[in-house]
Image (tube, rainbow, N blue to C red; front, top):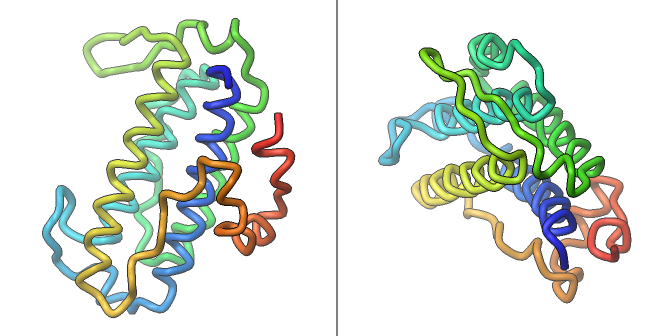
Length: 185
């Protein structure tokens, strides 16, 4: 497997994990979503909001949109999962679309990240690796916080291997995806 295929699979795995996580969280009340919890961010919603805002920023940077910082600042503060989940799904799809068009030249192209007092420059593949790691890190925090609710944390780490297709059949169907497209290249 080459880097481009790996990044494409990771982008799809990211979407699958968010889909599964949000589905598991749907039964939670507003109070449970906003309840103080032990983690880097003080609640489930605050953590999900952070994931979304950071995704918007980095995805805008990958697309070379000059207003990436403004997009980050403009992400609405979602009060519930019914509004956050579709916004996250849209960000996830933008990431998938970016990775679907990725080739070696684009993976090695410079991405400029506005950082307030300077512009950070990194290769697109490095930015993608950072973003995907960031998403896994904070989804893991949400997963841990869910253990303190009435909702069981869902399985989130079975999306990388083609041999585990039977574990994601329902999610793949819900997203309208085919195993051969995501994993068969």
